Length: 244
Image 1 (cartoon, helix red, strand yellow):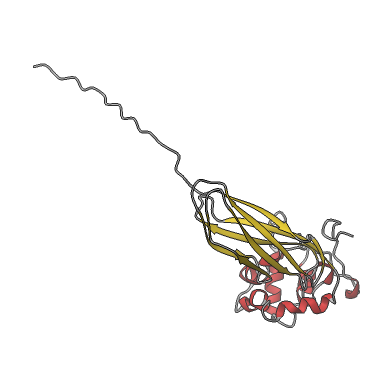
Image 2: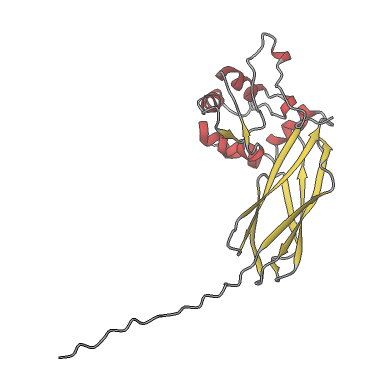
């Protein structure tokens, strides 16, 4: 009995690159340095360099002080559209970074676009900082606090204004002081009239327990020990954060 030969069958698959949209974004700002209290205006030039229509499914901003206007949601291949934005700088000082997040149908969605500017002292900063606790700003900076404490509280009411900075803390008390009474030099509002002592202590304790290399979303690069005279409390600030 002769056995038949089993011949291998070579299956050849031809793969073609799948058409997809590709997002490219250019940021333009009317000014990159303003006096605190001024409204900054700018736009995102959103281009589709892919070979399929780009659909903008949603846009998020890091804080309620950043508002947007969008002219269209669908961008054909090879076309562009403009997204305009405004940032309210009341109560802000030094180097400020906000983000605009674009959710689209491209494979690498979402895209986080940083908007960076410098705010110089130009208004009564103490009064400007109080705006954070009034509508509409309080919806981001105070209302979400609820019954939260520690890390959850920080993420609810602090993190949206202070992205990608390293906070180095040696002792808890100076942190409690800054949270309670504020510090104009770094644009830190006073939370003492709005958060309970236990909430403030939980924030300070959680920050203190972080590893020194942990990246926190906070503009304060370091907090020095509390001096004998609280009126002389200062925070070292680099020249980049406070340009002349």
